[in-house]
Image (cartoon, rainbow, N blue to C red; front, side, top):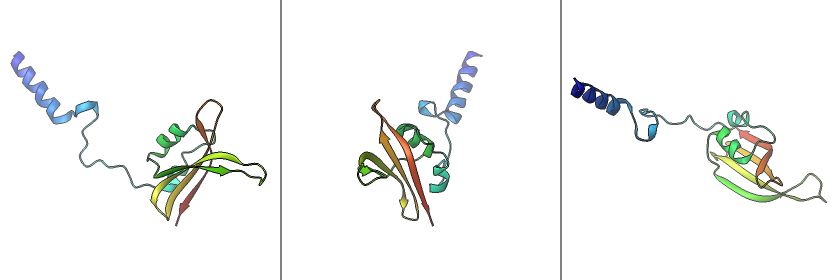
Length: 112
Protein backbone atom coordinates (compact mmCIF):
# COMPACT_ATOMS: atom_id res chain seq x y z
CA UNK A 1 0.00 0.00 0.00
CA UNK A 2 2.81 2.42 0.88
CA UNK A 3 4.58 1.54 -2.35
CA UNK A 4 1.47 2.44 -4.38
CA UNK A 5 1.14 5.81 -2.63
CA UNK A 6 4.81 6.56 -3.23
CA UNK A 7 4.49 5.69 -6.92
CA UNK A 8 1.33 7.79 -7.32
CA UNK A 9 2.92 10.76 -5.52
CA UNK A 10 6.05 10.55 -7.69
CA UNK A 11 4.03 10.23 -10.91
CA UNK A 12 1.82 13.15 -9.92
CA UNK A 13 4.83 15.32 -9.18
CA UNK A 14 6.50 14.45 -12.48
CA UNK A 15 3.34 15.28 -14.39
CA UNK A 16 2.55 18.60 -12.76
CA UNK A 17 5.55 19.90 -10.80
CA UNK A 18 8.37 21.96 -12.12
CA UNK A 19 11.77 22.42 -10.48
CA UNK A 20 11.94 25.54 -8.35
CA UNK A 21 8.26 25.49 -7.44
CA UNK A 22 7.02 27.37 -10.48
CA UNK A 23 4.01 25.93 -12.29
CA UNK A 24 4.86 24.04 -15.45
CA UNK A 25 3.11 25.88 -18.27
CA UNK A 26 3.55 24.75 -21.83
CA UNK A 27 4.31 27.56 -24.29
CA UNK A 28 3.83 30.32 -21.71
CA UNK A 29 5.27 33.55 -23.04
CA UNK A 30 4.51 37.03 -21.79
CA UNK A 31 2.12 39.06 -23.96
CA UNK A 32 3.73 41.42 -26.48
CA UNK A 33 4.98 44.71 -25.06
CA UNK A 34 2.46 47.55 -25.28
CA UNK A 35 3.83 50.99 -24.37
CA UNK A 36 0.40 52.50 -23.66
CA UNK A 37 -0.69 49.61 -21.40
CA UNK A 38 2.65 49.72 -19.56
CA UNK A 39 2.37 53.48 -19.02
CA UNK A 40 -1.02 53.00 -17.34
CA UNK A 41 0.67 51.01 -14.55
CA UNK A 42 3.13 53.78 -13.60
CA UNK A 43 2.69 56.34 -10.83
CA UNK A 44 4.68 59.45 -9.92
CA UNK A 45 6.98 58.70 -6.99
CA UNK A 46 7.19 54.97 -7.74
CA UNK A 47 10.69 53.57 -7.00
CA UNK A 48 12.76 52.40 -9.98
CA UNK A 49 12.63 48.65 -9.20
CA UNK A 50 8.88 48.73 -8.56
CA UNK A 51 8.34 50.58 -11.86
CA UNK A 52 10.24 47.87 -13.76
CA UNK A 53 8.13 45.18 -12.08
CA UNK A 54 4.92 47.10 -12.83
CA UNK A 55 5.85 47.47 -16.50
CA UNK A 56 6.66 43.77 -16.68
CA UNK A 57 9.61 44.08 -19.06
CA UNK A 58 13.29 44.92 -18.65
CA UNK A 59 14.45 48.26 -20.05
CA UNK A 60 16.37 48.12 -23.32
CA UNK A 61 18.49 51.09 -22.23
CA UNK A 62 19.10 53.29 -19.24
CA UNK A 63 21.24 56.39 -19.17
CA UNK A 64 21.96 59.34 -16.93
CA UNK A 65 21.03 62.67 -18.43
CA UNK A 66 20.52 66.30 -17.49
CA UNK A 67 16.89 67.23 -16.99
CA UNK A 68 15.30 70.47 -15.94
CA UNK A 69 12.34 72.68 -16.69
CA UNK A 70 14.22 75.96 -16.48
CA UNK A 71 17.36 76.57 -18.50
CA UNK A 72 19.21 77.86 -15.42
CA UNK A 73 18.37 74.84 -13.25
CA UNK A 74 19.87 71.54 -14.39
CA UNK A 75 19.47 68.35 -12.43
CA UNK A 76 20.60 64.77 -12.94
CA UNK A 77 17.95 62.29 -14.01
CA UNK A 78 17.84 58.74 -15.33
CA UNK A 79 16.10 57.94 -18.60
CA UNK A 80 14.93 54.33 -19.04
CA UNK A 81 13.62 53.10 -22.38
CA UNK A 82 11.32 50.09 -22.82
CA UNK A 83 10.31 48.46 -26.12
CA UNK A 84 12.53 47.55 -29.04
CA UNK A 85 10.45 49.17 -31.79
CA UNK A 86 10.39 52.92 -32.44
CA UNK A 87 6.61 52.92 -32.88
CA UNK A 88 6.00 51.10 -29.57
CA UNK A 89 8.34 52.59 -26.98
CA UNK A 90 8.01 53.84 -23.41
CA UNK A 91 10.46 56.38 -21.99
CA UNK A 92 10.49 56.74 -18.19
CA UNK A 93 12.20 59.65 -16.40
CA UNK A 94 13.51 59.16 -12.84
CA UNK A 95 15.27 61.43 -10.34
CA UNK A 96 17.49 60.33 -7.45
CA UNK A 97 16.26 60.80 -3.89
CA UNK A 98 18.27 61.53 -0.78
CA UNK A 99 17.67 57.97 0.42
CA UNK A 100 19.78 56.38 -2.33
CA UNK A 101 17.13 55.27 -4.84
CA UNK A 102 15.43 56.84 -7.86
CA UNK A 103 11.73 57.56 -8.29
CA UNK A 104 9.56 58.04 -11.37
CA UNK A 105 8.76 61.65 -12.23
CA UNK A 106 7.22 61.34 -15.69
CA UNK A 107 6.95 59.05 -18.71
CA UNK A 108 6.20 59.23 -22.42
CA UNK A 109 4.60 56.36 -24.35
CA UNK A 110 5.05 56.36 -28.15
CA UNK A 111 2.60 54.29 -30.16
CA UNK A 112 1.97 54.58 -33.78
